[in-house]
Amino acid sequence: MPFPRAGVNATFSRESDPPSPHRRMLINIFLAFQMLGLIGSCALVLTTTLSRRAPRNATWQNFFTSWIISTVSYALLLFSGQLGQAQAGKDPMFGVCFAQAGLVYGIPALTAATTFGLIAQIWFSVQNLQARKVKHERLWTIGLLILPYVALFSMVIASWATGIHNPEVVTINESGMFCHISGTSVGRVSAILVALMMIPTVALEIVICVSLRRNWETLKRMKHPLAIILRVVIFTVFAILALGLSGVFVFSSTHGAGLNIVFATMPVVAVIVFFTQKVSNSN
Image (tube, rainbow, N blue to C red; front, side, top):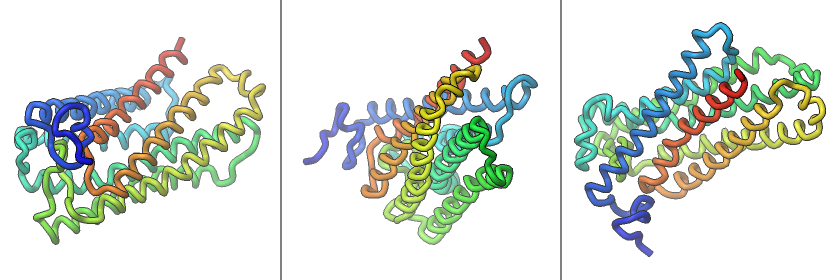
């Protein structure tokens, strides 16, 4: 059954664009979340980098650095002055559109990999809490820091190669929010890659939850025992949501503006979670 052309259902419609005023409103909401995520992520990274009192965790900083790259990439039309074209339903300048089209297929793999890295670091911490030394932890950490950018550049290069050989497929997507590569399998490959990273992330989160439950008495003696638990719970939701979105993107070549806005809220939620934890930990 076809989706209506207006109202809430049109936000998630896969068949047509919303009316022009509605379209502009959705694009502005999408970009507002991207800018909030960008400002918040930059603030957190700068705080931990410049403050002597703030803990410096490489995987934590890598996680928020990936969201800085993500938000800049998705807001590229705004920064390049091409937003008006997108809001009017027209293709932006080819160079900008081509650059963004490549980046948006690498970003999901980047953020999925940094999420896995952060959860792996939490697992290392839980193991150390139980006096179980992780073998070659430093090497594992270096690998977790490098993996996200290998995934990013692999997808970006593959996307740009597709765009160079078929310039006509580089266009604004149906929601008008960013440029993409239409009619190819690049999006499905990106979604599959995200799923392959999120499955072990969810599995590791389950292992952490079981381990924390078994060692609850030891955990309660820590200064802020709920911080680790809250992070695991939040990122379990993140991982499940990412898996769900990946499934949609794998089995559907197009999707409505609503799913793009859901994805745009992720860095904002991450910033809120970590900022509130830092405030509570400082009290």
